[in-house]
Length: 437
Image (cartoon, rainbow, N blue to C red; front, side):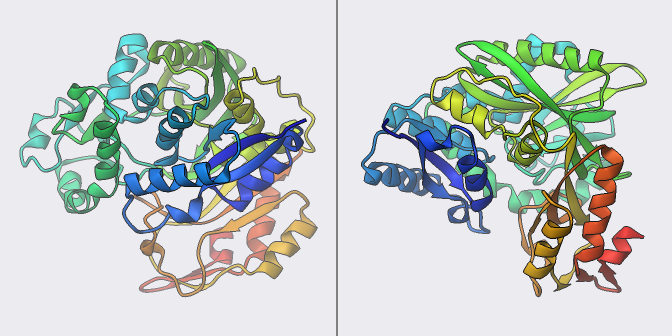
């Protein structure tokens, strides 16, 4: 049987391992249209150069193009429809992907479909000195670029001073994503009422409650949610502490979330695509609010699905891209529950000690199934990386499986005991032991 040739936009070793371990991996040959290291740097995104490079790689492979996929955020999810149209592969339309990813346009579409499940919002121009007084929202609210990732330049604004404080950084850094994003919109024919907007930021009412993410797919117009992951934040912070699967939300709430997903995905017109949709559920009011729609799987959740189901949801992504309806995920995994912990600090500093390979191997031996992915090396300053949220610094991702949530926490704490990490801040040092304390 001839192999199916699958091109990945944004490939790395972690996800390649997940792909090659899929039950149907033997029928596929995976190719890197782009490696993640080729665009995930502190340099500017040159969208034309990236698209041309990926297209050249695909052409030079000189094999049939059976599928083009990605599991990362900007710019790869937007590149997939462009490349798929060029090479005749199955993918959602760029217009409907942008309707999901453009935060303002997406809210406009959501307002038509699920008006009771979104916050009040308004677009504004951060270079307009009168923008704040023009906004029809009361404090507090969130401000975010029309396109971002990892909460880049997203800030909670409690008062006028908060707004004034973050404005210089916003004005300095906004073009990092705005320019390449706008290049895509203008080059590939998005509507003039979107491409001609002077505004580049959205302000939204604060949403509160427990957070979760619904993972699903739409195949030939049929929308299905196959898993809900809890997103648990750090105390008194918007930064995530961990993702935990399966969700512990009441079943009735999960059913309502799935219904909202079906309506909004169908209403936007997204088709033949995987997706994840983020929500808040406020227990006190029993209200569900939609945060955002991402037309891709969350690669942060792949190991969680593998630990619980025995197969990562890369399998779902692959089936959709190859034109097959995905099979139901069975509970055939090694663990009952799984989590991705985000090991982070909230002050800038220099890494004096970083986890080494011996410590990571010790964790794998002592806690089978546990994966540690560090993001810094000794000598690096935390703020040198652009790929952090606005309020914290992610030092490592730690994937753990267990019997129950308590078992997950115990294993995570044991990881911190083993990892020898030290951050030198301006006035003091932080070590792994301090985070455990």
